[in-house]
Image (cartoon, rainbow, N blue to C red; front, side):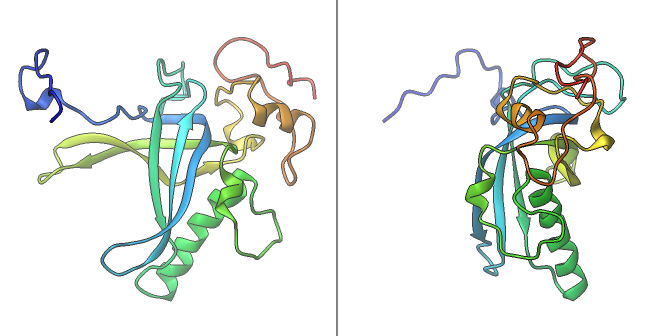
Length: 197
């Protein structure tokens, strides 16, 4: 039987799960992607995990978050809703993620092999989530439609790790359907080595 350690805890409230990133927009990589089925209704979906690569842009749009790099956050998306309209919305959400990750290109209509998404980089938005019986506890989650490709102008001010494999590939124009970034690396006050592309 394992030894449990509560020497530094004042109560059970001092025990938490893995700390998630604080709200903001982040340069992230996909660590894992697996097609799943819900337990109750066997609804098909996608379970994915993102890892933060660089500190991000807080919701205020000013400054930079700190100590977030390396944190992970899970997301589960389902392909089917309660009716045709909800199903179309679910599939639209998943398609946006696929395009932002570069595994679905503009103009395509096909099944996606989510194994191809592992290691891909994109920008994600994390928001605040309330949970618990009375929704009194605060947590964080990936926001609805909160995905952008690295070169998307809508997120040009989000800090990026310009030395990451995704940014290196993007700067060489090797990522189909995406353009090289033309911005500084966000709010870090240093010029990106790709800013003159």
